[in-house]
Length: 50
Picture 1 (cartoon, helix red, strand yellow):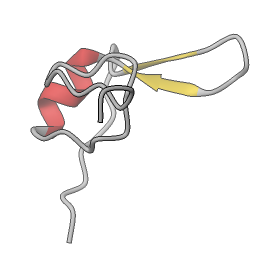
Picture 2: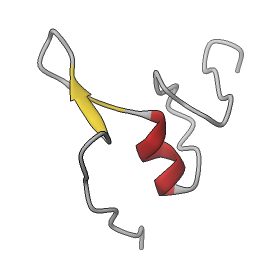
Picture 3: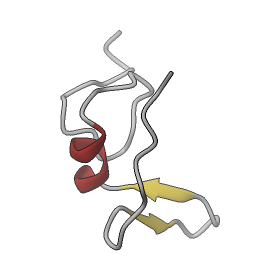
């Protein structure tokens, strides 16, 4: 079961389309890469290369 990370200020912003975009701060707090090609991935994953 995945650990639930509480959302805090600075963890995300809303895009022009209305989607929630998680920041590097949130990804580091979560502690792992989901390999989904997130815009602010601090782990260096790029799904265009894989």
